[in-house]
Image (cartoon, rainbow, N blue to C red):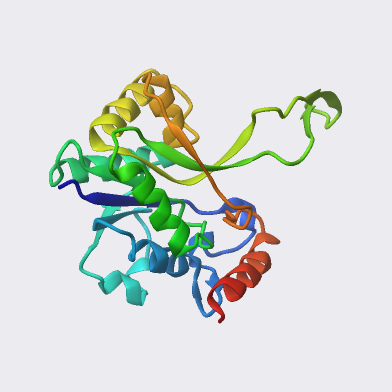
Length: 232
């Protein structure tokens, strides 16, 4: 039976958070952002291991309680998100079957609900087609120039905002990512590499509260969401 491997790219420094700490280590509802994220992922259905990609100079992860979980493996992250994911995939390749599933989730997206995570996994696990969590774009989209002037209004019909988790088989994701990086393609998420390789993908509707912490104002909002979700 296929197994599930989870990759958490956590090698970033979070420059837009205007903090001395990388955003994944900022305090959130009594723990760190990364711990809140890992708390959910470690309860995923079919889980074999969680591979966390860390900055080579990371001095924080080893001090977290969650770091002692035997299902966690550490790899050195790369300069970009795609490099970190690739490093993790190369480690997984040595341990996994080609038809095992690989799920990638943002370290700074701690408000993913466990029920939704497992529904997402189960909806894809029995098939062969990968997929992503995403939400329809609700806001009016403006194309803006270098001087912050509006150039055009973008039709949002059929547009969805990609979230994580994103899940694919190892046999799909590893060569797709390697090929995309080899030709210098910009990889903003794993799905873009899969699309470029010609694989069809499913979109699973996701909620607006699956927040990614990017800016300082996101942190108190994430805390409100978590406390409401978990009653803490």
